[in-house]
Length: 553
Image 1 (cartoon, rainbow, N blue to C red):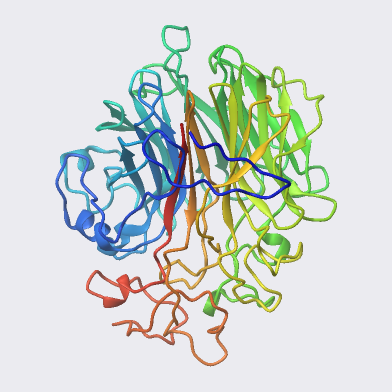
Image 2: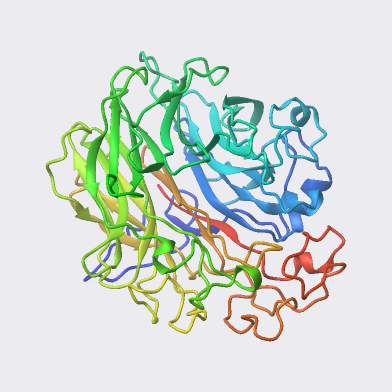
């Protein structure tokens, strides 16, 4: 095995290797000549168009099978379904590898609007919601793969609900989809969002096979969303009544679950200040009875968050999405994640330093409730923003994946990653990094796992002229095998958006569509409907955002 080390603060790239050797920078979502197939086998019109559609994929998830680490599954917000439904809607992509991540078979979770298969029409999502995303995945210890996602309608009533799909035979065979919690179908109703799942991978213990789900419940009328939790003890057939874990201090979201070797369950989340009585901090709760009850929240860290809203509106693009600041950038936020192993409980997050740089930190605790050890920086970068961390543990080692703009020549604490002060593209300057610790999180070694850089600010939202890079990365381990996934725009060829004229921001370098005629859309209109499968512009640049993976034995 080739070992990667950071020497004197420099990053060393992980070269591709044969199966069983560290493998970096492999394309998962090959939608130029891919092989999208239905869960039941074969293809329909949606699978056919997905296979060559070059659409957008983001918010990746990944799971390594503890029974066979050569088997791993991944997921994303996959926009290929919009080619057929014409609504611009996303669906939950499901991808599986039996070669340790070297090659992938591609599909969608059954139930998308145009899915007429038996699996599709039997799913509770079919006909009740038009868009699905926020993928999260976990294997249990006996070959069951659970895939959590939200499903919603963009138009009111939004009725965002939570679902978990189960795949058997180590992720090869789709079984069913079950609703965990329902969104209220009204303008100011409940929206269930930001789902995260984890299965207890032990075998023969009292909590073996338990499946845990945590999420943010948005009430719709005020910024007082809270974290809820449910569990399944029967293989995902039924779930307990949703249980509120948090106290409603600020906005609470980005829940992440870790299961310890003794069956303890940990849920970390981000608390967002929105009034004087609230704070920006990372919090955690613990259960020692298999998710039946939880401790009161404990503070892991008070933070100065790194938010896209630091620079203006949540997201800035072109046309009707242009901002007065002249910048183009995707949405991002500080968030936390948790892993637990024999050495303790480890929570990772990103936040601003005194120099206003966003860096990745970890804090370690013996029990998840006592946080006396100081936070430790995971990265060694003196410049650039480090963001979207996730953490996993296996075989006595911790791994953290994150994205990093330390190579951005235009870096400033007062600019989003990938932007110049003039609001133009500073290049594909963001890299994927994996840091590893064999000291229980006390010290870390970084490795760059992306061969080429990316930029989060390309305008990939079809019909909207704005960027979207998702909200997270994902990493998973089974024993010594680790897999980390991230969103990447390297395959997106630059071009001019023919809708942009005159004073519109046509020269910022973030337009990814090549010149062609958008028929029957008016290129001067402030917005337009998503083109149909017959529109030749669909496969021309601009939208080809992909998911990449790095693995290590």
